[in-house]
Structure formats: C-alpha cells, structure tokens
Length: 197
Ligand code: VGL
Ligand code: ZN
Image (cartoon, rainbow, N blue to C red):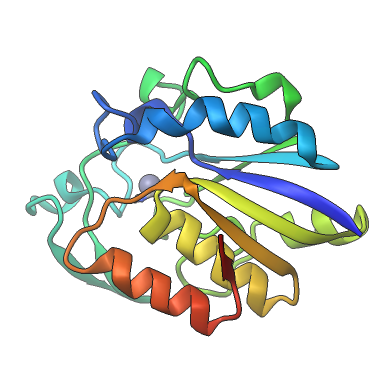
C-alpha cells in the first residue's frame, strides 16, 4: 500500500490577510508539516489563475460570492485570488514545500474553474494527477488543506470516484462555510465513500 498526503491549496490568499481568506487557514500549517513524515509521498496543489479568470466576480462586474451560469453549470464568483506569480498565489511561507514530490497547479484554464485536483469544473478535463498517482502505485490518499468545502471536497469526491481509498483529516482542514457549503460537503464526501477523520 502506497499512501500519499495530498495538501490542497495552502496558499497566502486562503490564509488570514489573503484575498479569499479562510478563517484559521494558517492554523493547520504546522500540523501538515508534522504529518508529512508519515507518508510515502507528499503532493501539493496550487490554485493558479490567470488575471481576468472566469471565476472572478470582477471579470463579470458581479458581486463576489454571487452565482453565475457557466457552460459547465453553476459557478460561484470569487474575489480575485491566486493570480499566477503573485504573493497571494504563493504557498504559506511556513509550509514545508521542499518535502513535496509533486506540485500540481490547477485553475489555469481561463474559461473553466478547477476546484478538484483531478478534474476541472466541467468534470471531464483531467489535470493529469490520476495518471501520476497510478504510475507511482499510489492507492491510498489522505487529504488536508483549504478549503474543506470546496477544493478539498471536490478533490476527495473525485479521488473516491476514481477508486482511491480516501481519508480527509478534518483537523488539518479549514472551511469557507458559505451558504451551508460545509454541511453539504461533509454529506457529499460521506456519500462518496470518503472517510472523514
Ligand atoms: C478554492 C474557491 C476558489 C479552494 C479555490 O481552494 O477551496 N475555493 N478557488
Ligand atoms: Zn480559485
């Protein structure tokens, strides 16, 4: 059994002071660093949007946190965040980035958001992570990071659907918790066969 730690989006814009700050987002960094020692592989994801991304409210002259209909379905419109090459897109400066075997970026397609580390929000365009995991013989994943109810949730559900054995370590995640999104995410993950630890 090869077990990977998948660290989702521990980036400055999701930490206090960031553009899309998640309450307590920085509190999980030390625990994630400690946890890294227990895994065969460590993989980091990095939300990585071009300026003017279609998931940004400013792109549509809309209010942040409003909804829009995209060709692939409903999409929350976010404040501008994790713009490629900015400090906001950089990892939290305490995160042990050097321990990572792979850093996978997502959300770079201007027209499609990508909450999941496996598929863009159209649910069909792959990021390539599945192939990486399979070719390394990784069967088991533990997810931690930000945000529980969006990128952790979508990544965990996709991983379970793909047949990986998936656990989310909830103590090492923090949520946006917007409009019931955390409860819905917990239900959806449990339904998909994800273990919430
Ligand atoms: C995320 C909203 C937009 C996340 C990323 O990492 O959960 N949420 N982009
Ligand atoms: Zn994003």
